[in-house]
Image (cartoon, rainbow, N blue to C red; front, side, top):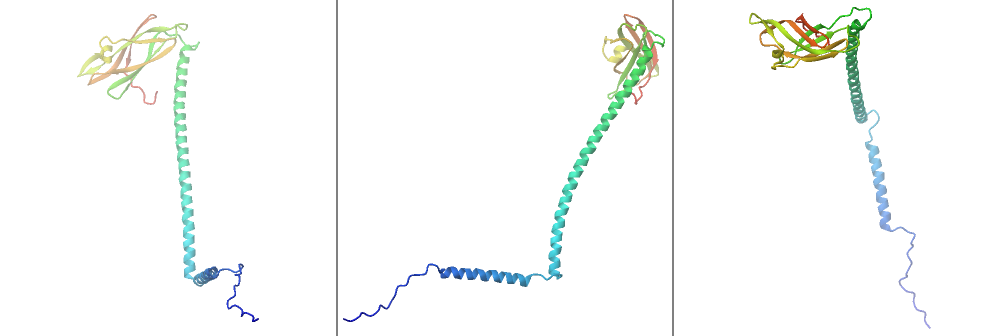
Length: 241
C-alpha cells in the first residue's frame, strides 16, 4: 500500500503575543518624530550670550516688568483711594470740631452774659433792652436780634410784647418806618417775650428803598412794666453767631 504525499500547505497558528505590523510601524514613526523634533530644537537652541538668547531674555524681562508695573499700579490705586477716604474722614472730623468749638464759644458767652444778671453781687435792674443788632439778608431784608434783660423779678416770668420802629433819612428827609411797614402787614402782631433773666428775640424786617437807618425805637408792653427805649442802628458783627 502506497503512502500519500505530504500536503503542500500547512496551517500554522498565529502568535498572539506579537504586535501587528501596522502598530509597530506607527510607534517607529512617532519615535522618529520625537527624535527629529528634539534634534531640530537642539540645533535651533540659541547659544548663551548670542543675540538671539539676549533677545529672548530681554523679552522675558519685559514681560516680567510689565506684570510688576501692573501690580504696582493696582497697589497705588488702592492706596490712593484709601488716602482719599482718610482725608475725607479727617476733613469731616475737623468740620465737626469747628462747629462744636463755635457752639461751645456761644454757650460760654451765654453763660457769662447770664451770670451778670443772676449773680448775687450785681445790681438788680428792671426790664430793659440790652441790645438790638441788624444784619442784611439775601433778598434785601434785614435780620434783627434784640436782647431783653431783667434781674429784679428773679422768681417769676417777665412776659409781654415787643414792637419797634426804625428812624432814618429818605430822600433827604427824616422818616420813621413803623412796625407794620417793617413787617409789610397791616396790623402786624407784636413779638411775644417770656423769660426770667434774659431772652434773645429774632426775626426779619424790610426797609423801604433808599432809606438809611439811624436809630431803633423799641416798645415793650407787658404785665410787669412798659418800656420805651431808643438805640442806635447797629450792624451785627460777622464773627458772631
